[in-house]
Length: 188
Image 1 (cartoon, one colour):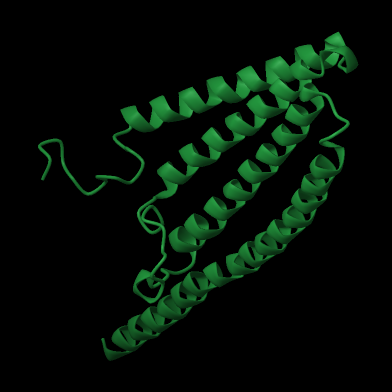
Image 2 (image 1 turned 60 degrees about the horizontal axis):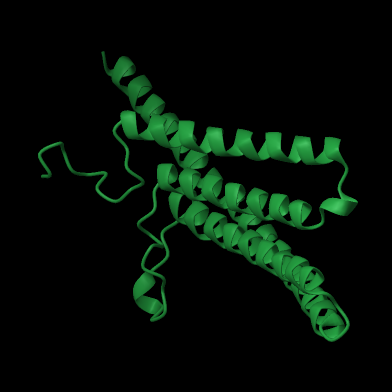
């Protein structure tokens, strides 16, 4: 009988070691989030490059050209915001909590968004980025071929429909983006 107990004790130790190893593996994700910080830096370089392009052409450009260049700046800003959402929400959801008390300017939404809310924010950002690309194509319609424009519209509609389906699926599954995820139907 004592041999069986010793064996079970060894199993528990092995199980705890495996679980600790698996749980610690989440830190591998931090490498991806650090990589996204570098990608954010790349976007800053492209943003500055585009902003200088807008400033350089402002006196000789048409209104449409200025609007197209401004839309490029908005597109880069949405993409950068999307990266920030992924970095912070992903890190907090999958790696480790960040102590917001140490950061006086901590945005209110950070730390409150769960995976469902993250998916919806990501999808909303992708739809917005797609819409800006589509708007840029429409504003530059003389240089956009019909087939390319058709595919851009189809892709945009797929993003919109996918976002709606994700939102409805999460709503009917009982999730609401992390706002009241601990409450029951009576609001407790």
